[in-house]
Length: 126
Image (cartoon, rainbow, N blue to C red; front, side, top):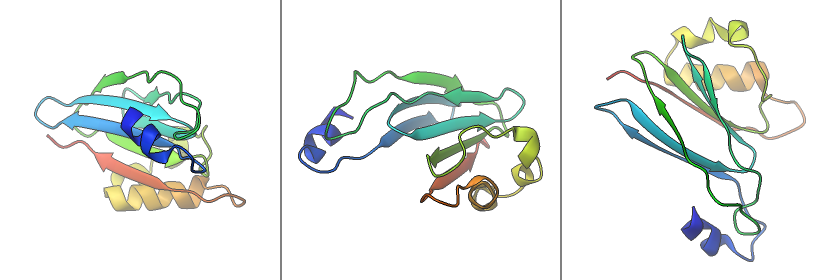
Protein backbone atom coordinates (compact mmCIF):
# COMPACT_ATOMS: atom_id res chain seq x y z
CA UNK A 1 0.00 0.00 0.00
CA UNK A 2 2.87 2.33 0.82
CA UNK A 3 4.46 1.69 -2.58
CA UNK A 4 1.21 2.53 -4.34
CA UNK A 5 0.92 5.67 -2.21
CA UNK A 6 4.40 6.82 -3.24
CA UNK A 7 3.69 6.06 -6.91
CA UNK A 8 0.46 8.09 -6.88
CA UNK A 9 1.86 11.07 -4.97
CA UNK A 10 1.09 14.27 -6.88
CA UNK A 11 -1.94 12.79 -8.66
CA UNK A 12 -5.61 13.10 -7.74
CA UNK A 13 -5.08 9.93 -5.75
CA UNK A 14 -7.09 6.75 -5.49
CA UNK A 15 -8.73 4.32 -3.16
CA UNK A 16 -7.68 0.69 -3.07
CA UNK A 17 -8.03 -2.56 -1.20
CA UNK A 18 -5.76 -5.56 -1.21
CA UNK A 19 -6.74 -9.13 -0.42
CA UNK A 20 -4.53 -12.15 -0.10
CA UNK A 21 -6.19 -15.56 0.03
CA UNK A 22 -4.56 -18.87 0.84
CA UNK A 23 -6.83 -21.20 -1.14
CA UNK A 24 -5.59 -24.23 0.81
CA UNK A 25 -6.60 -22.93 4.25
CA UNK A 26 -9.22 -20.27 3.46
CA UNK A 27 -7.21 -17.62 5.30
CA UNK A 28 -7.85 -14.11 3.94
CA UNK A 29 -5.82 -11.00 4.76
CA UNK A 30 -7.35 -7.61 3.84
CA UNK A 31 -6.27 -3.98 3.92
CA UNK A 32 -8.10 -1.04 2.36
CA UNK A 33 -7.83 2.74 2.15
CA UNK A 34 -10.78 4.90 1.10
CA UNK A 35 -14.37 4.20 0.15
CA UNK A 36 -14.01 0.50 -0.58
CA UNK A 37 -16.26 -2.04 1.12
CA UNK A 38 -15.48 -5.73 1.47
CA UNK A 39 -18.08 -8.10 2.85
CA UNK A 40 -18.32 -11.81 3.41
CA UNK A 41 -21.78 -13.11 2.63
CA UNK A 42 -22.75 -16.46 4.06
CA UNK A 43 -23.80 -18.01 7.37
CA UNK A 44 -21.22 -15.88 9.23
CA UNK A 45 -21.62 -12.47 7.56
CA UNK A 46 -18.59 -10.24 8.13
CA UNK A 47 -17.64 -6.74 7.00
CA UNK A 48 -14.06 -5.60 6.62
CA UNK A 49 -13.37 -1.95 7.33
CA UNK A 50 -11.17 0.23 5.16
CA UNK A 51 -9.36 3.19 6.68
CA UNK A 52 -10.25 6.75 5.64
CA UNK A 53 -7.77 8.36 3.28
CA UNK A 54 -6.69 8.92 -0.32
CA UNK A 55 -3.73 6.98 -1.67
CA UNK A 56 -1.22 9.42 -3.13
CA UNK A 57 -2.43 12.26 -0.91
CA UNK A 58 -2.99 11.21 2.69
CA UNK A 59 -3.06 7.71 4.12
CA UNK A 60 -3.16 6.58 7.72
CA UNK A 61 -1.23 3.60 8.95
CA UNK A 62 -2.58 0.55 7.19
CA UNK A 63 -4.63 -1.75 9.39
CA UNK A 64 -4.92 -5.31 8.20
CA UNK A 65 -7.81 -7.63 8.98
CA UNK A 66 -8.10 -11.39 8.79
CA UNK A 67 -10.92 -13.77 8.05
CA UNK A 68 -11.14 -17.52 7.60
CA UNK A 69 -13.47 -18.66 4.81
CA UNK A 70 -15.88 -21.53 5.07
CA UNK A 71 -16.77 -23.42 1.88
CA UNK A 72 -19.39 -21.49 -0.08
CA UNK A 73 -18.68 -18.10 1.57
CA UNK A 74 -18.85 -15.22 -0.87
CA UNK A 75 -16.51 -12.22 -0.89
CA UNK A 76 -18.01 -9.06 -2.39
CA UNK A 77 -15.90 -5.91 -2.76
CA UNK A 78 -17.43 -2.72 -4.08
CA UNK A 79 -16.84 0.99 -4.44
CA UNK A 80 -18.91 3.74 -2.83
CA UNK A 81 -21.18 3.79 -5.88
CA UNK A 82 -22.94 0.82 -4.28
CA UNK A 83 -25.03 1.34 -1.16
CA UNK A 84 -22.82 0.37 1.75
CA UNK A 85 -25.65 -0.88 3.93
CA UNK A 86 -27.71 -3.54 2.27
CA UNK A 87 -29.26 -6.51 3.96
CA UNK A 88 -28.16 -9.91 2.71
CA UNK A 89 -31.80 -10.97 2.97
CA UNK A 90 -32.44 -8.48 0.15
CA UNK A 91 -30.15 -10.43 -2.15
CA UNK A 92 -30.58 -14.12 -1.31
CA UNK A 93 -31.54 -14.90 -4.91
CA UNK A 94 -28.29 -13.30 -6.10
CA UNK A 95 -26.12 -15.45 -3.89
CA UNK A 96 -26.88 -18.71 -5.65
CA UNK A 97 -25.40 -17.49 -8.95
CA UNK A 98 -21.89 -17.37 -10.32
CA UNK A 99 -19.40 -14.73 -9.19
CA UNK A 100 -20.18 -12.75 -12.36
CA UNK A 101 -23.94 -12.78 -11.78
CA UNK A 102 -23.48 -11.88 -8.10
CA UNK A 103 -21.32 -8.83 -9.00
CA UNK A 104 -23.71 -7.72 -11.75
CA UNK A 105 -26.70 -8.24 -9.47
CA UNK A 106 -25.19 -6.18 -6.65
CA UNK A 107 -24.52 -3.33 -9.11
CA UNK A 108 -28.03 -3.49 -10.57
CA UNK A 109 -29.89 -3.84 -7.27
CA UNK A 110 -27.80 -1.66 -4.95
CA UNK A 111 -25.87 0.69 -7.26
CA UNK A 112 -26.50 4.41 -6.77
CA UNK A 113 -28.02 6.17 -9.76
CA UNK A 114 -25.86 9.29 -9.27
CA UNK A 115 -22.41 7.70 -8.90
CA UNK A 116 -20.09 5.35 -10.75
CA UNK A 117 -19.74 1.92 -9.22
CA UNK A 118 -17.58 -1.18 -9.36
CA UNK A 119 -18.00 -4.60 -7.81
CA UNK A 120 -16.16 -7.91 -7.77
CA UNK A 121 -17.31 -11.16 -6.23
CA UNK A 122 -15.73 -14.51 -5.40
CA UNK A 123 -17.20 -17.71 -4.00
CA UNK A 124 -14.77 -19.75 -1.89
CA UNK A 125 -14.68 -23.33 -3.15
CA UNK A 126 -11.64 -25.03 -1.65
